Length: 259
Image 1 (cartoon, one colour):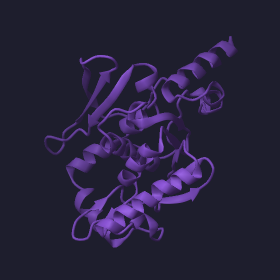
Image 2 (tube, one colour):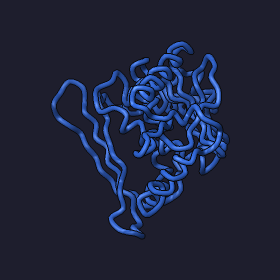
Image 3 (cartoon, one colour):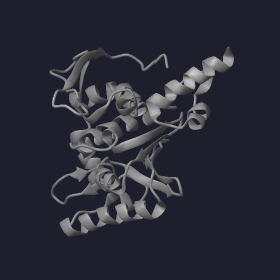
Image 4 (spheres, one colour):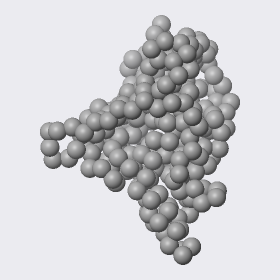
């Protein structure tokens, strides 16, 4: 009986993550949770921003939804295994911060590369215990993707803040003060449980539904004190011109999934 329960949970996790059976069996969280929750609010928030970056990094067809063929959710970190080197080159500019002089910071402020190994590259937010791995490619492929981003910055005259010291730059501080404050940011961060939860279950968009393209956008508060979160997701099914769409208004509450 216990073996059957474990097997069902493992199979459920495989649908959420795209992992192999053995990876899914080993990856279950404390208390037998199919998908473990992030260890901290900081980790949850970073995952929500990464999910938003995924939504905006490509609006075209990919082999797997969002161009991610497998996700590896663990308590202290989450791994995203990309489908191709081309996808990595699209994603890195949306994550690693670069400064456009007299303009803005492109990417996620405060994000840096902690280390590189055979699995991939580990990203973290300066000053916080966070970890997101980008994986699925060889070390040389990730090196080329990084070099492509540096080449873009050189051509545009931008400053690659992600190559700088492990502290927030003055440009990032100024940008965050201007754009990561106010009701919009409060609204987004209050819904971080949703973005994080979707990121940790990303493969469900291609293991349960046959979607060529998944798009979405951040919800926005209509006025200060708005107590509900609106999110929208649209799946474009394979082999047809019809669309399946769903929108939902979700009240603020902790992320407590049953699985």
